[in-house]
Image: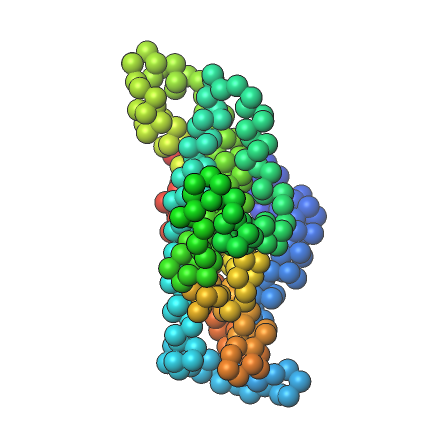
Length: 309
């Protein structure tokens, strides 16, 4: 009599059948709210027209128009370049200062540590529309001019958000200010998980604080730094609210603050000037290319920073 064995697959310390009931709710949530919308967006990029008036299959026609028709190509490459600058400013300023503040906050001789941590994290808890509107007032020379004159800083009373040369930088720095607390807390947690044995050995060898940072702290927080960079990259290429709060959906002035998020909104949802009619297929094409760009940036970063040592 033949005996049949049921094959089970080990997952961690249990089997797949053991873990499946716990994974099912998260899997259903992922499929319904992430995987399915992604697939439908990719499919929508192959069509043109409105849902109510009928859609027609155009294949890769939306992608061809996006890169060949000046109406779309100029706006797309401008938004792509602005988003890249937006990301680089966050990577250097937000994450760079995040590591610096985390090192200072984990110093043994620092007093009032909890107070500084709270002050750094408070902007994260504020609504983007609120902070954007407040900074818009602070950067308005009509509002801040008299106050700056009393401080003998009248040269700072300039239309920062009205100049194409400075608008994107100002919006980026405001965004860095608001979200600084998240990378700081992640780096603080990573630094606190480093064993004191490393620092004791470095102290015996006579290593300076700078050498301890470069040779011990920075290499050991590399996985966290990579994850912070990935989160920054993904969030910046989907940024919309900060530009909407401080400028408008057209990326004023003269599209100087236009990002991929605002471009997608105008084309796919609101309708872009001068046509003014939404084109969901073209919007889905922009979203699909953005997804591809994110994959090209995220996957190599994951492989290089999350490897097993």
